[in-house]
Length: 281
Ligand SMILES: [Fe+2]
Ligand SMILES: [Fe+2]
Image (cartoon, rainbow, N blue to C red):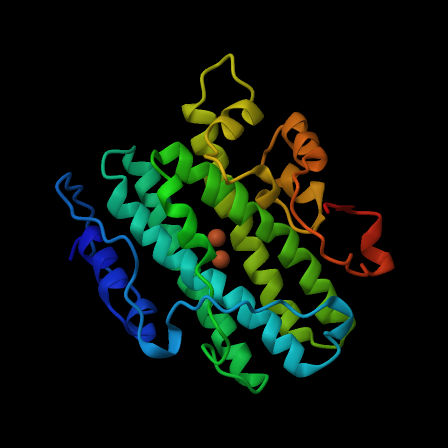
């Protein structure tokens, strides 16, 4: 089996269990420029895309088990979209550096692992994945991922970057509420996500021209209406971006970035986290 065949299987198979099936050990990567790229993944009924809004519960409500299940359901939806979009990217970007294709493939497998961890935890907390509506927010951005640099800036540097903030924050909140198992899962995902964002930083640094700063190359590769606002959580932890190798200028510009979005009532951040981060909204 080739990487392309496997990625097509992930996108064209409706079943969640197929999307979570690991690739064969002897899989080989043979790029093929004439591939036909599906616009959207196929999904069985339980995991169909929905237009219904489903909000993540507020932090102060995560003392309840059902709300923790709901929060994890929300994150699990992101992982499902991420694994499909990495499959989509492997099909779309056939002629990039083979090392970058290897990175994408590795990330895809780790997104499968994240989704499985979340699905199990949702089940343990008394809910099933797909019980709540699944939005398709990440898939709305694929038309903006025209080049590999667009893809890396949107997916790796922004959406996966923001996940560093969410994983840090929710790990702590789950722990405060005595849910050490959910906190442990967030920590595992945080560690993998650091390497995913690092992969994006490698692309950025290899492909930018020497006169450009990281921030310039990054922001030039975002296609409107996608803005850097999506590259951070509602509570931003600059230290996490230092760990993945962003420049100080990048970290500062991201901290200061604002757009017209958000009238969300501010979350109440636990005292012990306040000194590490910054409100984004
Ligand atoms: Fe992930
Ligand atoms: Fe990721």
